[in-house]
Length: 76
Image 1: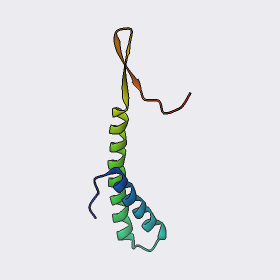
Image 2 (image 1 turned 45 degrees about the vertical axis):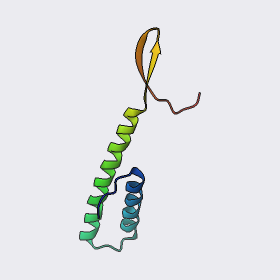
Image 3 (image 1 turned 30 degrees about the vertical axis):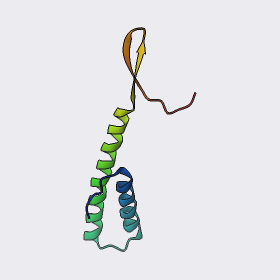
């Protein structure tokens, strides 16, 4: 099974793998193969999230200096 490109497609694929593993109908060999595939997709999703987090850094100009601040998703 080819790993999809978009984050959403990767998450859907990962959910399907989890469902297959939870059913318990796969052989041990197939379960291990699905698990390995899930780990690969999980790592790719994690990398995508880390890259997105880096992009959500805001540059703020304070008193003539550029300061970098992390994007805060919590409302105050």
